Image 1 (cartoon, rainbow over the protein chains, first blue to last red):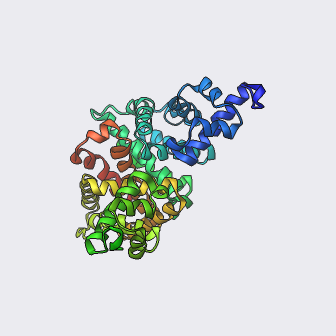
Image 2: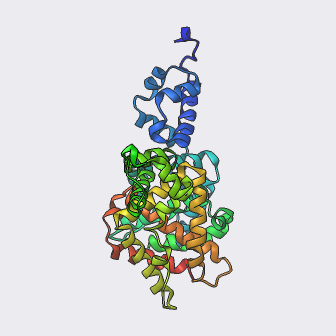
Image 3: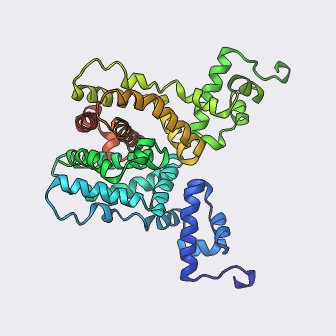
Amino acid sequence: MSRTGRRPGTPETRKAILLAARRAFGERGYEAATFRSIAEDVGVDPALVVHYFGSKQELFAAALDWPIRPADIFGGLETSNIAEMAEMIVRRYLSMLDQPQVRDAIIAMVRSAVSNEQAARMLREFVTGEILTLLGQMTNAADAQLRASVVASQLVGIAMLRHVVRLHALAEATTDEIAALVAPAIAGYLQ
Amino acid sequence: MSRTGRRPGTPETRKAILLAARRAFGERGYEAATFRSIAEDVGVDPALVVHYFGSKQELFAAALDWPIRPADIFGGLETSNIAEMAEMIVRRYLSMLDQPQVRDAIIAMVRSAVSNEQAARMLREFVTGEILTLLGQMTNAADAQLRASVVASQLVGIAMLRHVVRLHALAEATTDEIAALVAPAIAGYLQ
């Protein structure tokens, strides 16, 4: 491949592909972000992208996996006080959304999910397997999965209206102001 | 225009254009749904679409305006009981989402908003002008706009996870089950 003048595969190349993929999925959506266009962005042969990631789904998962660690938000909540747990969840989530690369990844996921059934399925599987499992453990209610899903819906809605639609009041609000309103609702869902 | 064999403009044509536009914005997103492609779907001259709607933004607004009447959800709540108001809002919203053409319009709006800044602005203006105004009147709190925005975020999140991502527990839940969980949270936001 070096004969083509393109960059050969190194750990740095893999990272560069992931960065380019994250950007491409975010800016162009799941359908339009092709192996070829991502390879071009990085300056490598498309075959190298295939070599590293196999399929577009795997590249999507790898590209979006890193910044969103559900355990960073929903894990290690060493308290039995639901109000405290809910407040920590909201604060951790909002501070994660304040990181541009995390926010971009979440928006990329939403963008892909609304335009592509395959991406919607991936997001569904990711949320069900990684997030609802953690959230569901926080409540003993019979409808734990529904409650966990409603918590997720509140968090997704905040990302949408704060960072995508950018409703003025929500985009300008501080973490404290949002947490004061939303944490009691989340606590109610997890009761 | 009749010489081209295409349909001339009638009130029915206008309706057909709106239907096609709603479908096009939903299926292809704001960017890809062109005047030309929508005119082709209906079998009319693109100039007729321009004649009726002027700009793509106006067509977008007209196409998505009809099924979403904020007053149908947030208006005419003749009660001072916040818990009852919240429950009515949730029930009306869920039953609106159960209508495929309304659901499609909302998903089309979200899809366009996440992929296009112009559409995000339109949605922002629509929600701020039409929905937050109604919701904000329900609370006397100093942060009424933030509270109204958080209510909207909960409702948007439910549409996303129930109808787009289709998390199993939320997609399968009945209106009663969701209202029982979500109405108290909405009431808390509006207090």
